[in-house]
Length: 322
Image (cartoon, rainbow, N blue to C red; front, side):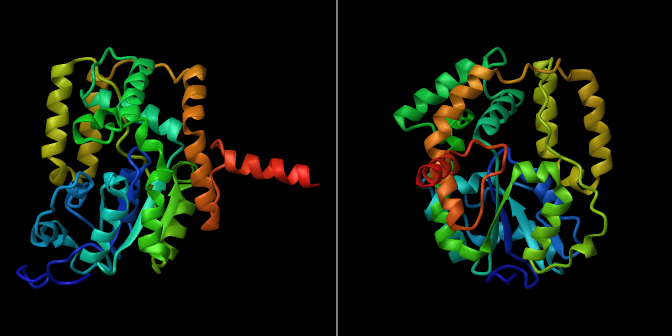
């Protein structure tokens, strides 16, 4: 961490940022990192400081950014997590490295088909799309905006469910800039064996995993649907305005959230249909193939649960050659 001209001498800037992707466990990852004594967290999880670059707009002076890390002065790592950064690609990566030369970045990827479904449920729970909108109609709208090349526009962010899973469009920019200072993990692994993922991540950061003790890893930012719209609007507003307070009192937040869910949680939604999963898998096939090829160059493979056309193609060529 380094001091910033014009800012109080002990103010800090982050040297570790979770850059994405949305709905891939970044909230849980942020909280998990904060359980290590050598890691300090920003006062808000998503600072979105570099987000304007994604839309071709300027960012504010670093002084405003540094103010969010007052509690990180004695930590080896100061951390924030804004999953939208990933979609800024190469320009955002370069700007972040220029502003924060010692920065390390963490990217969590999720099966894009599952991410699309999760994003749909999330924006519906935040009342950013009509409650009665079905998933098929939602994907139709996403696909239309994607064909027009405008699904990435700020005004169309609620319909980023489809385009946001085309990871190969942005990954090369981050690997080009950060190289060994980019750590890629997978949502599947974070959910399936979070202890192992976090110990490996701490080791990559040159932190003793044992210093974190037995990590109390509990998934956060769970998406649930609402019954009463007015009550949900109030709850979303209070959660946003009270984030700093609730961060200091996590047990209170869990209690309040649990009580709210008992009053205003709707019946569980149906799962994604097999036909919609097939449709999305087909849409993502070329992107996943390119992603798998890029990951292979980094010595990584997609999780077993992902559809990996790149590996399928390799297997096919190997069978023909044998």
